Image (cartoon, rainbow, N blue to C red; front, side):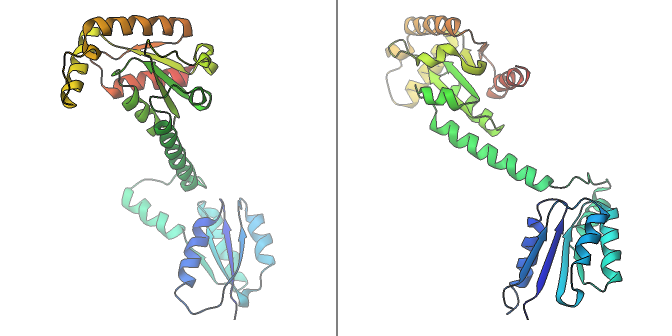
Length: 266
């Protein structure tokens, strides 16, 4: 016998389908004839579906968040002798008792969460790819582009923004390396400049050289070089016309939240 499994859902129906297939996998049964009805919203929809089914050959499985629809479906199925499985209802009832709060009763929330997760993954992959790169392609595709001299927290801030779902690119400003021409067009006002106090940057760069086993008196950490870089970066940011965030004595989260505020308000 090839069973007919009918899935009814007020969303896509993949949750019910997955549970059904997991259950069937435990039996030496032929492949099931699976029918799925998605985005079922009314009792009339349910009545129309049940009228098409043959009760003796069918099992009905459903995920409906609306308790009235679940009750209507159970009643209609019982009236025609149709075996039915409420997959979501008992789980929601147990959690309602445990958490002492009412469910939101919004179909498809789990898939919205999935979409948010994959959006973050995509943003993180993008951010890693366009980290510290002088690449106009990153400017074109990014949601936000951070520019600044070395050690102004461009990378950790980009990663933080990526975890919020934003594709973040960052471009180092080095006097010897001309930035991409596209940067000066500042498409969609997505470029944000980062600056820092020169004395603090001097300390940060010295510690960086020390951690690499290099001479802390190298030009990279000299105050003269730092002042020159910061002046150059300031002129670039002025030409771009972008907002500038001073990261001096701020945590990555504090600075990133300023950027998030700008992105949400622009």
